[in-house]
Length: 142
Image (cartoon, rainbow, N blue to C red; front, side):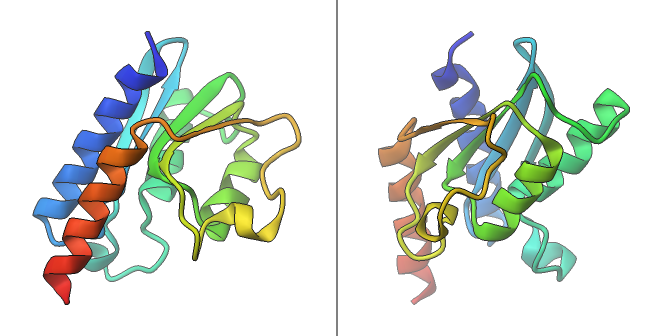
């Protein structure tokens, strides 16, 4: 299966977030071409600033695998991870991070290499679709 296949699933998660009034970011974690976790932002629902899609997906993936390390897994997320999520990704030792839209204000890449040295990064997959959904969300909020 392709990065686009899994990113479409992450995008669907972002749409769920949008429908619930959450910032529309979705995440999927796949291991051996099998989805082991799906999540979307739930900061409003849970009243928790750490309830980002990636953080929730990391917890679900660790539970699915029965361990805290996600080596051999790929995180698919519709928006470039923030510093918090990149730090968590570092600790999981996830093998790959594939993200959609860049986050010029809060994306981890603004602050240097925060991911594990062995983590491969691919950006720009489903970037346009993800960016449009985010812009639409914030336009409606203003």
